[in-house]
Image (tube, rainbow, N blue to C red; front, top):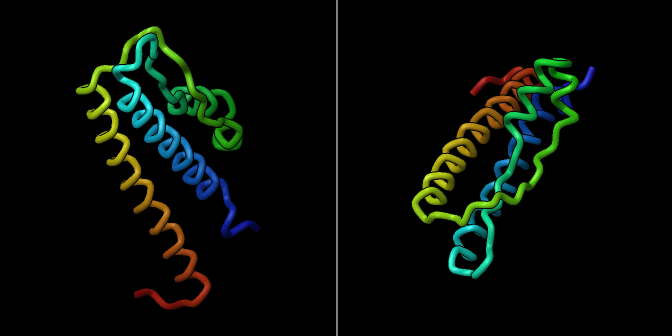
Length: 114
């Protein structure tokens, strides 16, 4: 029985990795907005995760990794700022979920719930 590296914690970790990568790509899009010929970069993760869940459940979801895609669009500052805000909200939710997961593990191991 895996308490620490179970399916749930692995999936939360992959989601955090995808969100971190998305923050980097959004920052890159903003930094290179005025660079001639620069194309917007996106991170694909959630749709692939949903497809994996539909096909093979939670175990299949663990094989999904975030990927970077170059689009044909030029980055727009307002869109990038909205993306950055959305990503930060998702990071906050994932951080709370990970904290709750490890608090439950601590409670299970020590028997102390504080």
